[in-house]
Length: 273
Ligand SMILES: [Zn+2]
Image (cartoon, rainbow, N blue to C red; front, side, top):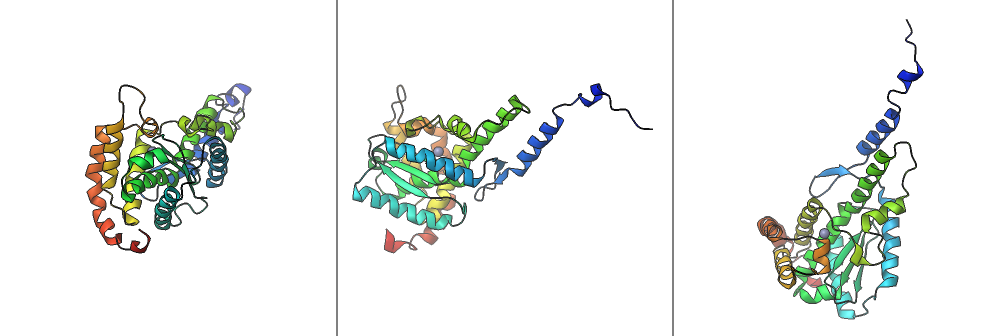
């Protein structure tokens, strides 16, 4: 006997096809972090991340003053070069670019697809290349982990669930939501605590592989903490990277685990130190 499909039974789950396609998209978009093994949903493609990151970075480069200081630029390119070498093909389509911005701001940031900015103010606070490698390694960690794509994906999922069957929010709009509509890096929104912890561990991993002392990450956060005016406005990097004693404690505990890797690679780049 054939069951009659009545209009009412057909409309019991009108959103089912949409829900299934969202669920499939989320499953298909599962990204496994190559360093930490953590898995999460990233619905954007690396190609989209590269395109949107580059577009936003161009805006920042137009708005802010790019440093022409040869020493500062050489320092960042030297460290970034060593780190890029050990990252290898973790994100094959990434279009890496490291730019020094001339400002007293204590800040550094990463955009999806491989765009990294470091401010001279933060560089001045850091005494050696090990410390700057901790900062750049952390930012590279956000890129390889595709945390930007993850943030945009969260916006997509909320958008789709909020308007099932409706038009998808434009990707550029999602980028603005995830990054605060930046043309100025000061508006980059804070990362989640989990993403920060993950970028910290990835920073230790990459720094050690590139022959930089992982213990330097602890010193960086101690210095940032020391110059922070906790009552009023914190330095920019702190406002986008919420920190506390727990974070310094976590890094102090994790850094020794990377010491062996650091010692094994310490002399590998001796001619480029
Ligand atoms: Zn971060």
